[in-house]
Image 1: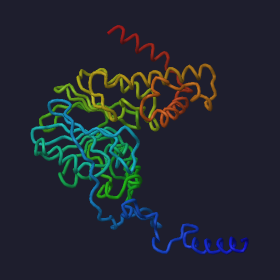
Image 2: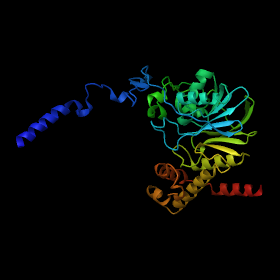
Image 3: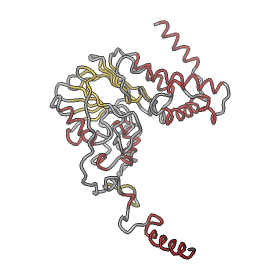
Image 4: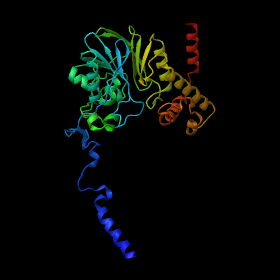
Length: 375
C-alpha cells in the first residue's frame, strides 16, 4: 500500500510539472490577456509604455445607456454606485448633455471612448446634433476619458482644468500648455489599467484645449454658462457648471449622494468651501458626480458628511487622540447605510486628521458666520 501511494504521488507530480511556477505550454504571456482574450492596450518596453496594435476584435462593450431628462434641455447618464470594475466597465460616474441651438454640450464625457460614442448615439435619438463643446469638472479619469471620441470625430473644443494636462500629459504647470516635460508616451490611468479591452479600446488621453484661471461666464451654442472654480476640493482643481437660465447646476464630485465620497485627493475645508459656492447659486436641479438625487436636497448629504467629518476630527485632535486611533473614534455612523461606507470612510477620516492637525481656521470661520448673519 505504501509503495502504491508513493507511485501515485510521483505520477501526480509529473502531471503537474507544466503548471508549477505558472508554466504553460500553450499561453506564453497570460498577463497580457484580459478576460475576453484580448491583448492589453500597452506593452512595456525598455523606454516605457508603447501603444500596441494588438487591440483585439471582440465586440464593443455595451454600456446599455439610457439618458434621463433632468430639465428642459439637460439629460444625464447616471453611473453605478460603486468603484470602477471590469464588470461595470467604468460606468460609475454621472455625465450630462445640454441641448444647444446647433450642438450638444457634453459635461464630463465618461470613462472611455466607447462610452462617449454610445452616449452620443443615445443623445442623437433625442436631437440629431454633434457635440462641439465638452466641459470637464476635474481631473479624475472616470469623468473625461471619453474626450478623445468627441475631439477625433466631432472636432470638439475641450474646456477644463489645466491640471488634466499637467498631471497626465506633463504640460507646463503654469501655462497648462506643452512644455519640456510633456510626455511622448501617456501613462496608464486607473481606467485603462482596470477595464476590459473591449471597453477601453480606442481611448486616448486628449488634452484640454481651453482652461481658465478663475470663474468665467460665457455662452456656447446659445446657452449661457457660469464655469465656477472652487479650487482644491475633491481634487487639485475642481469646477462646477451653472446654467442660470435653466436653474441647473452640474457639480462633479464635490457633491455625491447615496454613497460615501472618496476624499483620497481632496481636503475637507476645500469641500466645504465648494459646497458654500454651490449653495450661493439659485438652482432647482443639481446633478452630483455620483448619485441619483437631483432635486433641492441633492447637496444635503455632502454638506452633512463634510461638516461632521471636520467637526468630529477636530474634536478628536482637541482630545489628543492619536492618529492611529482616530478612525475608531470618528466613525460617522450616520452614513453606515450608504454605499462604499466601509471602503472609503475610514480613509477619509484618517486623511482629514492629517489635514486638520495644524488647522487654525476658527477665527476665519467666526468671521464668515458673522458676515452671513449680517446678510
